[in-house]
Length: 117
Image (tube, rainbow, N blue to C red):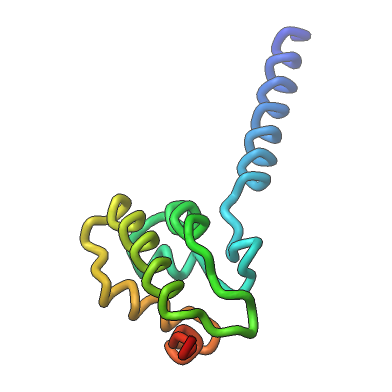
């Protein structure tokens, strides 16, 4: 009887630990450095996992909030992001990426138009 109770307690502890570890490492709904970007929705729309988008997005250098990017920054970021995302889903095209990002970008496409610098 005591052995059976130890097994039940151990099993219960394992279930609790697994539940806690899953919640602790769950993909955030937003990027910590860019809380405006809903990675779960973007991942869904691009048919990739949110953590794949997060990993690729960490390689780009967005313009600081409340500023517009330079043309050079737009093109550089797009090249890095698209290349990385296509490794996760080869069907992602430049146009599809633009469509999804414009839908989920605060300020839409206008916010991504480069400055005249």
